[in-house]
Image 1 (tube, chains in turn cyan, blue):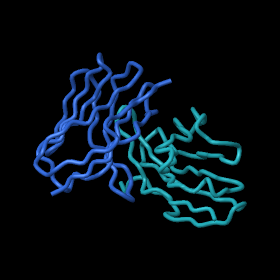
Image 2: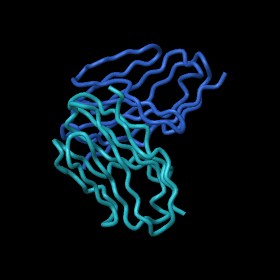
Image 3: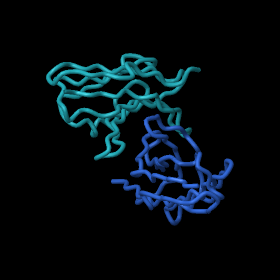
Image 4: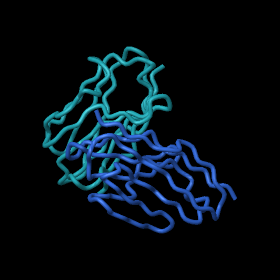
Length: 112
Length: 110
């Protein structure tokens, strides 16, 4: 398996634009997570899916953020409209509990 | 709410020395994970600890779990430069949903 695949790897966008981050989890994993990492706040869990169903979205910062998992092999995280404070590295991870989570390479988002 | 605390947050040590990183958590759990992150890279799994008294070793790193004390340790033996990275512990209280510590940034100097 190629691991968790995220795209794009880098994204630079202007404030106010819509941004969509994509994730393909490892086949057979039933849990998927979106994390955000910044120097100031560290690693934050944004949302957690189990069997394609959102279980906990309490970490989603505000209504500008939304996430979907239409099937077991694909998830998106959308920010609309984007703001400079959304600049961060966004990681997608998948797991088959109780095994560990496997992280994608991340998307470095810069909002100017 | 589960809290996971690591200490120290920053560690500078000389090659060849030993040291221990501590991970304390606030709620009963028997699932704890250690991850490593190199600068600008993603997180990779080091150890999975799933029971009280679990001990895992890989090279110069050894991790243990004491669920009664709610404590895990990551012991570094005879550090080498290649171990320089940030180390995270993560705890599950709901299957699959991990709460991460703030990370310990380790710098190994010659």
